[in-house]
Length: 89
Image 1: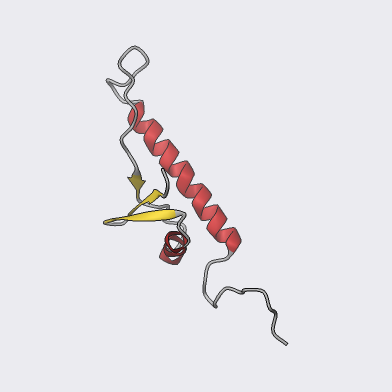
Image 2 (image 1 turned 120 degrees about the vertical axis):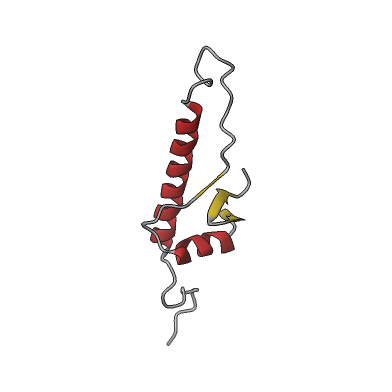
């Protein structure tokens, strides 16, 4: 008998892998923004502009299928040229 719960197609990323990938993406985005904000002209005694970075290249330790699935689920948005951004930001 088949299970009535929804199962992922063969070769699709697991829920655990999707969660780890999204966490790694968020961490890389945060670190990229902090790195850009810590440059000259954005220090504590200056105007302190916020980073304008909204899209990044995702971590390469996860396959493209993971990022495509996160886009399909609405967690990420593809910005073009290999860049992704968080949806709803």
